[in-house]
Amino acid sequence: SKALVEAVVENVPLMIFLKEATDLRFVIFNRAGEELLGYDRSALLGKSDLNFFPPEQAAFFMAKDREVLDGEADILDIPEEAIMTAKKGQRLLHTRKVCILGADGTTKYLLGISEDITERKKAEEALLEINRQLEEATVRANEMAAKAEMASVAKGEFLANMSHEIRTPMNGIVGMTDLLLDTGLNDEQRRYAEIVRDSGESLLGLINDILDFSKIEAKKLSLETLDFDLSGLLEDFIAAMALRAHDKKIELTCVSEPDVPMLLRGDPGRLRQILYNLVGNAIKFTDGGEVAIRVSLAEKNENDLLLRLSVRDTGIGIPKDKIGLLFGTFSQVDNSTTRQYGGSGLGLAISKQLAELMGGEIGMSSEEGKGSEFWFTARLGRQAEGAQAIRRPPADLRGVRVQKTVLPLALGERDRAEPAPRRIAARHAARERLNMFAGRNANILLAEDNIVNQKVAVAMLKRLGLPSVDTVIDGYEAIKALESIPYDLVLMDVQMPKLDGFETTRQIRDYESRVGNHEVPIIAMTANAMRGDRELCLNAGMNDYISKPVSPKALAEALGKWLPAL
Image 1 (cartoon, rainbow, N blue to C red):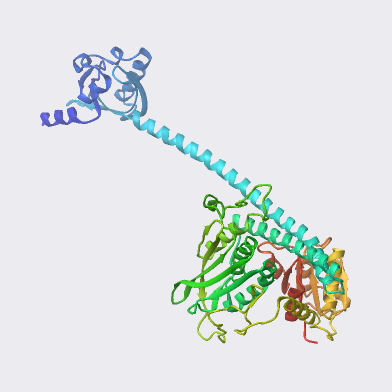
Image 2 (image 1 turned 180 degrees about the vertical axis):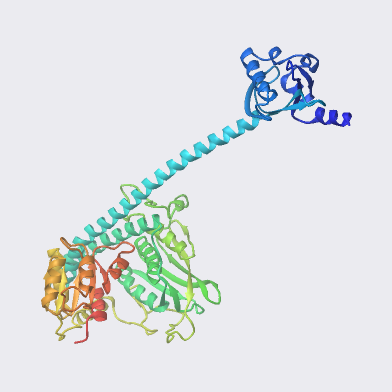
């Protein structure tokens, strides 16, 4: 009905108008159009666009009307047109126009429906601007990420080069000093050589800390998962720390709770590293008194457990206002130029990161002047029942007190040796180990371009009882030697001029090469000690990896593993 149509036209939220086909004057204008244009409809009816819009705009609207009326378009869709209104200023409209025919089939009216799309267009433009800004931000972020990646690669390369360049001369310092200490020195000479050795080991420890920190910072440090015996780890650790404690007249004790399993799975090296940092600090900051290690269970499940290790000392303690500095990088309680104790300020920061990597945490409590207690937890797996013979020490791992220094138990038996004889016995044992290959007629090829490191390696091999060693300075010479001589084992440096250790190994393993024995054992003996270096060596075809500075023990173990029984 007419009333229904009028109600719909009047209440729809779009501007609806009807124009005479002859002169394009308004005959109908609804409420929405009235509100949009800002005119009373009484002023609109009977008028044309010329009465409300600037001449050029009115002429444009009327020309579009004629296109429809003249049949050039059945429906004229104007997706976007701008008009000036008295009420709202400039607006954007989306308009559709269509002819209305009379009973005789002729065009009588022009119907127009307009939607105000101003706010929508503003929103679209704002969204486009946001997208543009996001695209620009993404481009900048990608550029920054690329630069950061390049910086990370450059940093990694720098660290690798720094590690190699420092470890190469360190191998000469530490290696030659160890060899010197095994010669007939008088007391004064021995004391000087031990100072050199200890200083070299301190420098090496600092280098390792910096490299570890850099790996952690770059999220490139990974943990190993190995089966290990906790009791053996603790005994070896206490044996290594006992003499340091004895020198400061400190009683060093280690107690394990009875319910702590000894056969575990995890990374024993990193566990020992944290313990070394905590106990080393405790000994450093304690002058006389006690350093006590306690091992207990914080949590126990069917397949794993949360191990808790605490280190309590009777040292100088830490002021409450300084505790917050402890686990920060390169931070120390005393940063003054008059500080008594040295250190890089990295040990505790690295220990914190390692504990968290192992699914645990680290913490401490302290009272100034009375001592401190540091503790950490680590989540470790449990070995399957019957995995190996259980070697379980008693709950108390302590030995007898010797001049306020507690020495470790060996398989639960008390070691009653005095500290000095114990140290001598250890040196004798080292000498016996160094001669472990005596009488074996083995030919060894050493590929090493550094003359000092050549001398260190040759001297170590001779002390191990392996005097038959040939040396070459690059990969080409190594391959040439292997073409004519049947060597039993090759010690291969990685960074060499002309042909590096990786490519040399690949050519040795290549059955098309003229090398006599393509399966000859090859042990990398390199100053590269970054994460992945071992894998690079093994992937190149090497059998094993020893990092510099090379210790006689590590060299002996590798040779014992790969040198054919002759």
